[in-house]
Image (cartoon, rainbow, N blue to C red):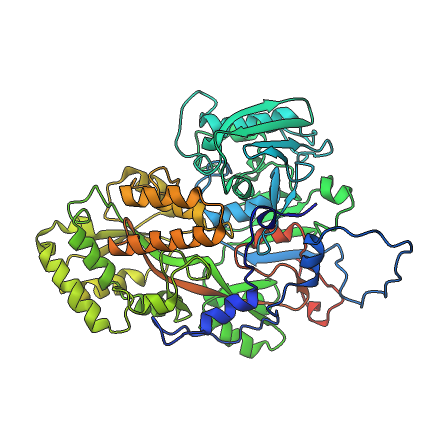
Length: 610
């Protein structure tokens, strides 16, 4: 079922996970050292046998089936058990078409299916889910999908276990194309529109099995963007019932066709999902959906997370490097995983055009250069971080190299040189005469609040001023706050890096039509580079265009967005947990596919049922 889309369209250099992690250590003398303790990765740099098998041309079938040795005990996935992880349950809405927060979206994706999805995002292989397979392409703009007839919704009202139909598919597509609510209201918060549905010229629903999508022009990334984990098939009645109330967090309104059915969703206590008994992929014989239950608990205290993990109330934990190291020392059976994850970052988005301060090029360049990225990595990520170019550093083939950054203003090893230049630009732009409201940044209330002290102090000291401050807003109000465009800017994590090709995400933040370009920042030069990179089918040439776009952004104070630091995410998991380890870009989707608990493993002893 899996097809390697990237190899079908163009050659793509594969970067193994070992190469990614090795890259976090190499060149540590440039642009600030990255502290890494025990990556624990045993991948090599060669293409795995299973990948070669999946992409090689088919060969003649043997006349006699080979005799296979029995699999060793404890290596065969088995059904059963309860998976548990700690996760913040907050977000904007339960409506997946309009949700933006990746934490909630990743988790809720287990209740849903997509037409097509990444089979293995790190290998860039695509498979059909509700579609019978990857669509046929008779030409560069036409995609013919065939949907399955055995897909059933969860058995709870209003769907009550009914079979999915072409009408369900039609409504999900047309709703996002039109960007209209049930009452006819047009809204801009269908966040997959710019990447996907604005490119759709026509959809022809041929019969109950077949439909054809025609694009208005060939699109390099359209098929891969269809794999966005938010691009799910909703139940119409459920989605429309919560359209006007983003505050709804009742599990009754999480209703899809996916492998797990949410029975509880309480922001303060936990979310619980159970196995969908009529999951079509399981029924079709695929080795998927092994857990009986999933439990997500919103624990944000590091010591509470540690205690829960050590008591095996959590199968896997994420924490800062110092906490992970302490638990690792106390629990030698636990396994560490360090992942260069582009969505674990710190950045600042600001009103490039709207502000009397930021619209001055000298001022924005001063702030860009004065930002101490090494200090920020130490403070925000406990040192397990590296200065981020505009495309996060884990995208090694696409991001500016650390060697180049080491001589770039804002990233130079010689901080005295950066501070001298930044202060000169601040004075040239008249920074001390600007209303300080434009330099009062926003953070959300679930962030580490220590940043309210050290970040303004860093900026004020480096620019020899007192203009900078931070204030907090509730996470649930952030999107509206940004859409109002009446702030000094937002400081926090900038996510939505969800594809092995980062061009669409770049357009999302730096393009005038970008879905997360809240301040509508643009320049003619940037729009031209975006157009060029999207017209380019040669991957190597596209990478160079994107690197040029990064250089342009850096030369203009970030052009609306200042990248600061990107970290390694640190995890520990018990050896009995298999297949649920986070990867470069994918986490939760694996839980519905390949993750399982080895209940015969000695470390499983003592694991409680929650």
